[in-house]
Image 1: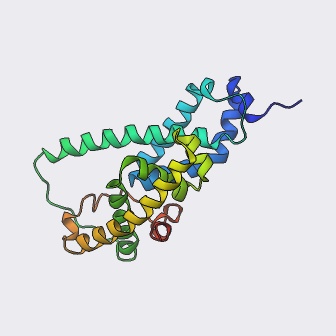
Image 2: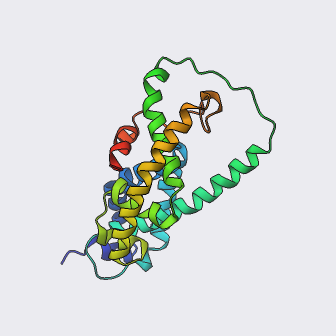
Image 3: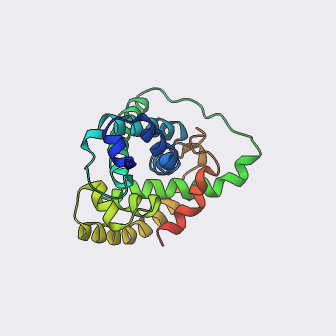
Length: 215
């Protein structure tokens, strides 16, 4: 009898980990990119997620269907830690003397501005949500987990996922509009993170899809 992927992971089968990576690495990357807004940091988060999955394989329950909720629970914890590290880094950088902005004259900048503005606005808006609401929104809307899978990933009841998602959607609409309006009042060379090239144009269609996600 062929063992399930879950059983093989628990037994320390590296082939099962490779299969898990092939099946879910792109989705984990999209989750990380939308959360962090930085392609390099997102790639690091993917690596850390699967390293942690291997290290924590013994915590995977023997019985169950999909391994995906368990994996995205790990990814969520990795992103929590990454976000804290990023905040400390930004705080340290803010204490350094400022540098003159270097203009970017690449032709693609013009076509990228609107998508980047929306992506940046939704990211900033989601960061203002309560952590529980934010994580439920990202897992259900950005990753596509159903209520039960998100509840398993976060270790909360299904009813909590439902209420948090509803609250997050309502709040996020207003916050995103507020962030877009605020950005229009700030010169582009003063916009946080502008000119750094952190968000790659077209990364998994994030910029276009994110605005629709909150409607």
